[in-house]
Length: 164
Image (cartoon, rainbow, N blue to C red):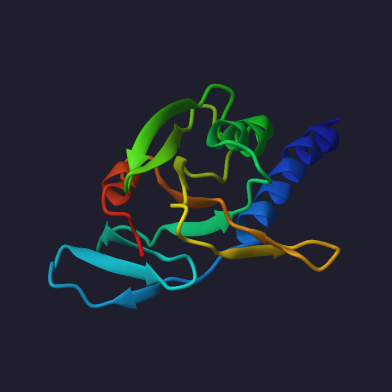
C-alpha cells in the first residue's frame, strides 16, 4: 500500500519534470556591474534576468501551451499534478508587460520541492521559440516562459525579467 502511494506521488513528479525540461535551455552567466547580483541571459529563450549572487541559479525553460490560455496552462500542468501542495496560491501579474501567473506552494508541498515556486509568463507575440517536435515532424512553438525558484526570492527575480 505504501509503495502504491509512493508511486502515485512519484509518477506525476516525473511527468512534470519531463514536461518542464523538454524545452530547457542553459543560461549563460554574464558579468554584471552590480556586485550583489548576477545576470543570466539565454539567447535560446530570448530572456535575461538578475538574481542575488548568494542564491542558487534559478531553473527556467519554455513550454508549449497547445493553444491554452495562461490560466488553462497553469491549471493543467501545475495545479493538476499537485506538485505545489493541495492549496497553492496563484496570483495574476504583469511581468515585462506580459500576462503572468505566480504560484506559491502551500505548506504541504511534496518533499523534494524545497519551497519552490513557479512563475509562468506569456511570451511576447514577436518572439517565436521552437519547442518540442511532434510525431509528425512539425515543431511546436513555446508559448510560455517558466521560472522555478525558491518562494522567498522568486518575485525579486521576476521583476528583472526582460524578453529580447
